Amino acid sequence: MNDQKEILSELESGVLTQPMDFGTKEFEDFKLLIRSKVSETPKQV
Image (cartoon, rainbow, N blue to C red; front, side, top):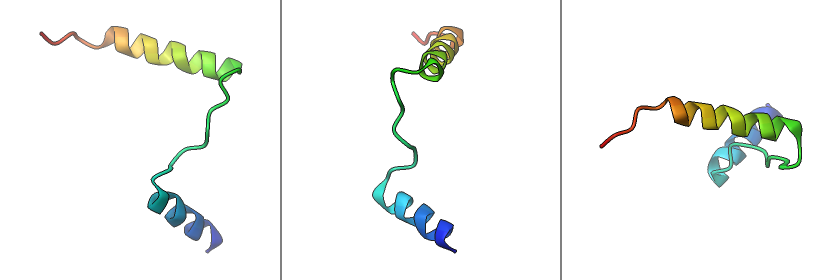
């Protein structure tokens, strides 16, 4: 039940994610993933 209250609190505040640590390997991997997805997206004219 406590988990549900925490989820509702996050939804009410508009915060659905935890802050990301910018100095990690995981963050660098995430940036690479996003860049690859952007490069695969067709350009609209």
